[in-house]
Length: 179
Image (cartoon, rainbow, N blue to C red; front, side, top):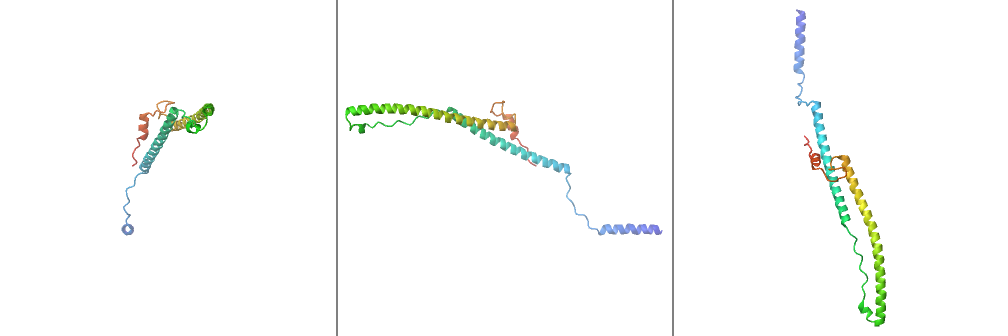
């Protein structure tokens, strides 16, 4: 009986201790770690998709801008040379007819020589500048296209084309919503 009494006292003490200990506060239901990491992963993927989409959009806009510049340069012709000095007939009236005729001939020779020099120098200089501008624009266009191809190898319709494949572009721009 003592044994039972001791056991009974022990049970009674344990139950009193349990009643006196503070109740644990209600904890919010915990989400399993696998679900938390899955949601974080989806958010990272959505963020990465939006960033990629923005980068592609920006790079495509820059590519089109360089493409327009190159097109303008290809269509551009040589600018007209500056007009020759004007013959001043009123000034020449002060001289005799013979002097006027000699001045006129000298002026026409100098004018023809000046025009030849201007045209030759201007043509060569313009061709050099125009050639450099064309090469620079083409180089920029190629660099931008290479950059886009590195990001998305199938963005363009062909290996050397800069025509965008609309299905691929739509896929790049279609990003999942972040939860």
